[in-house]
Image 1 (cartoon, rainbow, N blue to C red):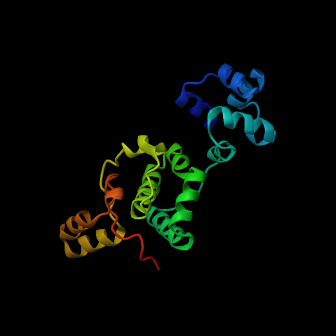
Image 2 (tube, rainbow, N blue to C red):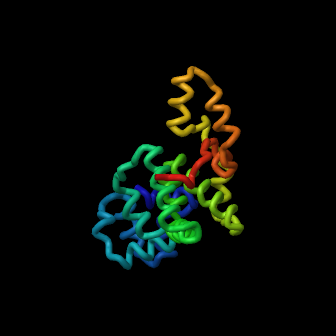
Image 3 (cartoon, rainbow, N blue to C red):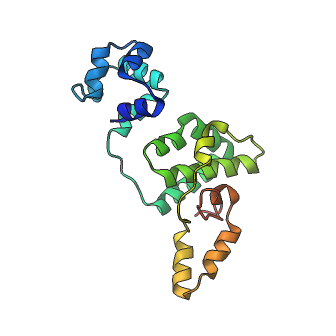
Length: 190
Protein backbone atom coordinates (compact mmCIF):
# COMPACT_ATOMS: atom_id res chain seq x y z
CA UNK A 1 0.00 0.00 0.00
CA UNK A 2 1.32 3.42 -0.97
CA UNK A 3 0.65 5.05 2.40
CA UNK A 4 2.69 2.40 4.24
CA UNK A 5 5.52 2.66 1.70
CA UNK A 6 5.54 6.45 1.94
CA UNK A 7 5.57 6.39 5.76
CA UNK A 8 8.52 4.00 5.67
CA UNK A 9 10.28 6.16 3.07
CA UNK A 10 10.09 9.27 5.26
CA UNK A 11 10.43 7.49 8.61
CA UNK A 12 6.92 8.22 9.85
CA UNK A 13 4.90 6.03 12.22
CA UNK A 14 1.12 5.61 12.22
CA UNK A 15 1.05 7.56 15.46
CA UNK A 16 2.99 10.46 13.93
CA UNK A 17 0.80 10.39 10.79
CA UNK A 18 -2.25 10.57 13.04
CA UNK A 19 -0.85 13.55 14.97
CA UNK A 20 0.32 15.45 11.88
CA UNK A 21 -2.84 14.82 9.86
CA UNK A 22 -5.37 15.17 12.68
CA UNK A 23 -6.94 11.85 11.65
CA UNK A 24 -7.71 9.48 14.56
CA UNK A 25 -5.06 6.78 15.04
CA UNK A 26 -7.70 4.03 14.76
CA UNK A 27 -8.66 5.33 11.30
CA UNK A 28 -5.00 5.49 10.22
CA UNK A 29 -4.49 1.98 11.57
CA UNK A 30 -7.54 0.67 9.68
CA UNK A 31 -6.39 2.30 6.44
CA UNK A 32 -2.80 1.06 6.77
CA UNK A 33 -3.91 -2.47 7.61
CA UNK A 34 -6.46 -2.68 4.79
CA UNK A 35 -9.55 -2.76 7.00
CA UNK A 36 -10.73 0.52 5.50
CA UNK A 37 -10.79 0.90 1.72
CA UNK A 38 -8.89 4.07 0.77
CA UNK A 39 -11.45 4.71 -2.00
CA UNK A 40 -14.19 4.98 0.62
CA UNK A 41 -12.39 7.63 2.70
CA UNK A 42 -13.70 11.18 2.69
CA UNK A 43 -11.97 13.82 0.61
CA UNK A 44 -11.04 15.61 3.83
CA UNK A 45 -9.34 12.49 5.23
CA UNK A 46 -7.41 11.92 2.00
CA UNK A 47 -6.40 15.57 1.87
CA UNK A 48 -5.11 15.60 5.46
CA UNK A 49 -3.16 12.37 4.97
CA UNK A 50 -1.68 13.57 1.68
CA UNK A 51 -0.50 16.83 3.27
CA UNK A 52 1.08 15.02 6.21
CA UNK A 53 2.87 12.65 3.81
CA UNK A 54 3.81 15.48 1.40
CA UNK A 55 2.16 13.79 -1.57
CA UNK A 56 -0.96 14.50 -3.61
CA UNK A 57 -4.35 12.91 -3.11
CA UNK A 58 -3.91 11.54 -6.63
CA UNK A 59 -0.75 9.76 -5.51
CA UNK A 60 -2.64 8.02 -2.73
CA UNK A 61 -5.55 7.02 -4.95
CA UNK A 62 -3.67 6.08 -8.12
CA UNK A 63 -0.60 4.27 -6.85
CA UNK A 64 -2.61 1.50 -5.19
CA UNK A 65 -4.35 0.80 -8.47
CA UNK A 66 -2.53 -1.01 -11.25
CA UNK A 67 -1.72 1.39 -14.05
CA UNK A 68 -1.22 0.42 -17.64
CA UNK A 69 2.43 0.95 -18.43
CA UNK A 70 3.13 1.55 -22.11
CA UNK A 71 6.38 0.54 -23.74
CA UNK A 72 9.23 3.01 -23.41
CA UNK A 73 9.28 4.06 -27.08
CA UNK A 74 5.61 5.03 -26.83
CA UNK A 75 6.28 6.92 -23.61
CA UNK A 76 9.15 8.86 -25.24
CA UNK A 77 6.98 9.69 -28.23
CA UNK A 78 4.18 10.91 -25.98
CA UNK A 79 6.57 13.17 -24.04
CA UNK A 80 8.06 14.62 -27.24
CA UNK A 81 4.60 15.29 -28.69
CA UNK A 82 3.51 16.87 -25.42
CA UNK A 83 6.45 19.29 -25.57
CA UNK A 84 5.71 20.06 -29.21
CA UNK A 85 2.00 20.65 -28.56
CA UNK A 86 2.30 22.61 -25.30
CA UNK A 87 5.51 24.51 -25.89
CA UNK A 88 8.64 24.55 -23.79
CA UNK A 89 7.55 26.86 -20.98
CA UNK A 90 4.13 25.30 -20.48
CA UNK A 91 5.80 21.85 -20.44
CA UNK A 92 8.16 22.99 -17.68
CA UNK A 93 5.37 24.51 -15.60
CA UNK A 94 3.02 21.53 -15.94
CA UNK A 95 5.67 18.89 -15.22
CA UNK A 96 6.75 20.74 -12.09
CA UNK A 97 3.20 21.43 -10.90
CA UNK A 98 2.03 17.85 -11.41
CA UNK A 99 5.26 16.44 -9.93
CA UNK A 100 5.02 13.63 -12.49
CA UNK A 101 8.75 12.88 -12.22
CA UNK A 102 8.42 12.03 -8.53
CA UNK A 103 5.18 10.10 -9.09
CA UNK A 104 6.83 7.92 -11.73
CA UNK A 105 9.87 7.42 -9.53
CA UNK A 106 7.74 6.35 -6.57
CA UNK A 107 6.06 3.78 -8.80
CA UNK A 108 9.57 2.51 -9.52
CA UNK A 109 9.16 3.44 -13.17
CA UNK A 110 12.73 4.68 -13.14
CA UNK A 111 13.37 4.84 -16.88
CA UNK A 112 10.25 6.96 -17.44
CA UNK A 113 11.04 9.19 -14.47
CA UNK A 114 14.62 9.73 -15.66
CA UNK A 115 13.53 10.37 -19.23
CA UNK A 116 11.03 13.01 -18.10
CA UNK A 117 13.65 14.60 -15.85
CA UNK A 118 16.14 14.54 -18.73
CA UNK A 119 13.58 16.30 -20.91
CA UNK A 120 12.84 18.85 -18.19
CA UNK A 121 16.53 19.60 -17.72
CA UNK A 122 17.16 19.77 -21.48
CA UNK A 123 14.21 22.13 -22.09
CA UNK A 124 15.31 24.23 -19.10
CA UNK A 125 18.86 24.50 -20.46
CA UNK A 126 17.87 25.52 -23.99
CA UNK A 127 15.51 28.16 -22.56
CA UNK A 128 17.99 29.47 -19.95
CA UNK A 129 15.66 28.47 -17.12
CA UNK A 130 17.32 27.50 -13.82
CA UNK A 131 17.30 23.78 -13.08
CA UNK A 132 14.79 22.74 -10.41
CA UNK A 133 16.84 21.22 -7.58
CA UNK A 134 13.82 19.32 -6.24
CA UNK A 135 14.97 16.24 -8.18
CA UNK A 136 18.67 16.20 -7.34
CA UNK A 137 18.27 12.82 -5.63
CA UNK A 138 17.04 11.34 -8.92
CA UNK A 139 19.76 13.14 -10.87
CA UNK A 140 22.31 11.18 -8.86
CA UNK A 141 20.85 7.90 -10.21
CA UNK A 142 21.76 6.14 -13.42
CA UNK A 143 20.33 3.16 -15.28
CA UNK A 144 22.57 0.12 -15.15
CA UNK A 145 22.72 -0.37 -18.94
CA UNK A 146 22.42 2.16 -21.76
CA UNK A 147 18.97 2.46 -23.29
CA UNK A 148 19.12 3.14 -27.02
CA UNK A 149 16.29 4.19 -29.34
CA UNK A 150 14.78 1.18 -31.05
CA UNK A 151 15.75 2.53 -34.48
CA UNK A 152 19.42 2.63 -33.48
CA UNK A 153 19.23 -0.92 -32.13
CA UNK A 154 17.63 -2.20 -35.34
CA UNK A 155 20.22 -0.42 -37.50
CA UNK A 156 23.03 -1.87 -35.42
CA UNK A 157 21.54 -5.36 -35.73
CA UNK A 158 20.94 -5.10 -39.49
CA UNK A 159 24.44 -3.81 -40.14
CA UNK A 160 25.89 -6.25 -37.62
CA UNK A 161 27.96 -3.38 -36.28
CA UNK A 162 28.37 -1.40 -33.07
CA UNK A 163 29.04 1.79 -35.04
CA UNK A 164 25.41 3.03 -34.92
CA UNK A 165 25.48 2.57 -31.12
CA UNK A 166 28.77 4.46 -30.79
CA UNK A 167 27.51 7.26 -33.02
CA UNK A 168 24.27 7.54 -31.04
CA UNK A 169 26.20 7.72 -27.75
CA UNK A 170 28.47 10.41 -29.16
CA UNK A 171 25.49 12.51 -30.31
CA UNK A 172 23.34 11.95 -27.20
CA UNK A 173 21.87 14.93 -25.38
CA UNK A 174 23.83 15.28 -22.10
CA UNK A 175 20.73 15.62 -19.92
CA UNK A 176 19.57 12.18 -21.05
CA UNK A 177 22.99 10.58 -21.25
CA UNK A 178 23.52 11.37 -17.55
CA UNK A 179 20.91 8.65 -16.88
CA UNK A 180 22.34 6.24 -19.47
CA UNK A 181 19.47 7.08 -21.83
CA UNK A 182 20.80 7.59 -25.33
CA UNK A 183 18.62 10.24 -26.92
CA UNK A 184 19.59 12.71 -29.59
CA UNK A 185 16.36 13.82 -31.21
CA UNK A 186 13.44 15.14 -29.19
CA UNK A 187 12.25 18.01 -31.40
CA UNK A 188 11.48 16.55 -34.82
CA UNK A 189 8.52 14.33 -33.99
CA UNK A 190 5.81 13.53 -36.49
